[in-house]
Length: 164
Image 1 (tube, helix red, strand yellow):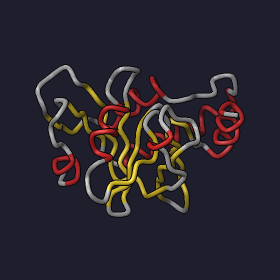
Image 2 (spheres, helix red, strand yellow):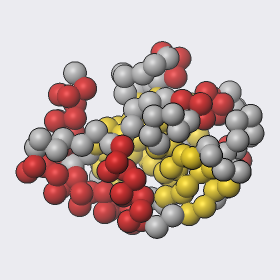
Image 3 (cartoon, helix red, strand yellow):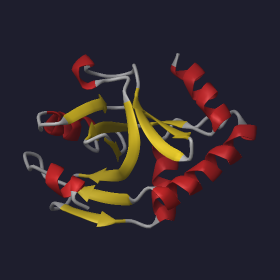
Image 4 (cartoon, one colour):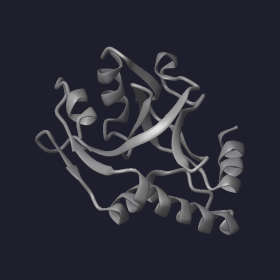
């Protein structure tokens, strides 16, 4: 079923991201990273914060609807308590890295798109859809800020994430 959804989303220029996501104050936040980067870990840590609704801890859907980017939960998850079918306007995207001291820094749009392409569920077997997806990611890079997030386990990172 995930392959069917990847194909359908591709017809719209949309994607499934290998990412975790949450909603806070009706705004969506996305955390992208390779396996082991901490997507599930950060979501589990933030899930206990007041007002946080988890969309997913391993995969989320990125859509462009009515001129805005939205993030949605998916039915594919590792833990059922960390999934929701809800969605919200995407406010920020964070690329995770747990190897350094805690820091959040802005990254260039092109670097962010490159990181998304490395981890997203891209239907490369549908070459006629790839151009539209790449164009959509270019629009995303202009509309939503990208950040690199280095964090330490056990730290309360939510205030820093929200106040950028």
